[in-house]
Structures are given as structure tokens and as C-alpha cells.
Length: 222
Image 1 (spheres, rainbow, N blue to C red):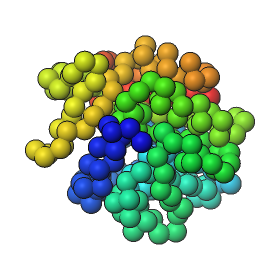
Image 2: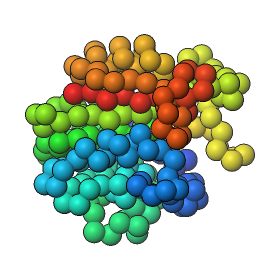
Image 3: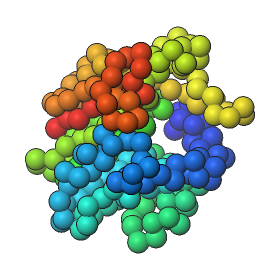
């Protein structure tokens, strides 16, 4: 495990309980502010399976249609404890997506969700490894739903350092993040063997936006 990934892991282990409590809004509820993710969750059908890499506190479970099988993985033991507390009847496993043992014996999934994970992986070869492994574990006809933070918003520009950003969490922590835009993310995902079906900046309310205003960069591929 690289020093940067280890530092991100340590941070989420330290802040995990607080971080989880700040993300209690569930998918499908009127109060939820990421309907674009909910839209793709609703494409799943009973009997299908989803892999949620970097699952955090397992919030994705709240938007799953009935009968959809789920596996969530994360490298933060604190966040996994939160996930198991919130969704005790679902399957959660410890693992670092940038390591081969995470992917061992996982099988195939009809959808793979990778929400706010890839920007925490520092090296391009590690990012490609994760994307290629995800492709290998996708069932025929399935899709990848991936988001990264849009760090080209004005409020984040002050944190940019040589191609990445160090985004503060409260006053005690800074989170290492790779800065992606539409072109760099498209190039990376294509190089990993995926076909990009849609890529766009999105606001919290789900509206498509631009590089200066969208809060997330969303990509759907197969």
C-alpha cells in the first residue's frame, strides 16, 4: 500500500463515525440530493447483483430495488463498522481496491459502483489497475457507474498542488485527491478497456452542469 493511500485510509478510520453521520440522507428519499446516482440504481432489477467499491457507510444500499444482491468493500474498518451497523443484513468486506487480494474470488456483477473513490488513488497505473479489475468482474450487459469530485470548482482551486489537490476535512485533516476533468477521465477509462456511454458534470440536484459549477464528474461505461 502506498504512503498516500495509507494516509487516506488512516484519515477515514479516524473520522469515519463523524463522516458517516454527515451522510445519513438515503437514496430515494425526498431529502436526498444526488438523484443522478439514484437514477442508475433504479436500472437494477431483482436477481441482479451490484459491487460497491469504496462503499463507505453503505449508503448505496438504501437505494437498491428489492431483490438486488449487494457486496460492499472498503479499506476503512471504521466505515465498514458503520455500514454493518446501518445495514446488518448486507454483505460488507474489508479490502483495498488497489491490491490484488481485494479482487480475488469476487465473481461477476451486473453493475459496479465506484462513488468518490478513484480520486483518492494517486498513481495512474493504480487507477488503471482498479478500472481493469472492475471491467474483468463485470457481467455481460452490465455497467460501471463512477464518480469523482470535481476539484475545478472555484472553491477548490486554492488547494491545488502539482496536478492534485489536498482538500481539508474540518481543521485537522487534508485529503489527497487527483484532479480529473472530462478529457483526463475519458482517456483513463478508455485506456482501461471501457466504452464510455456518458460523462458529465453534475450538481447535487442532479442537473448537468459545467466544469466551474458541477460538484461531481459522473461517468457511465460498459
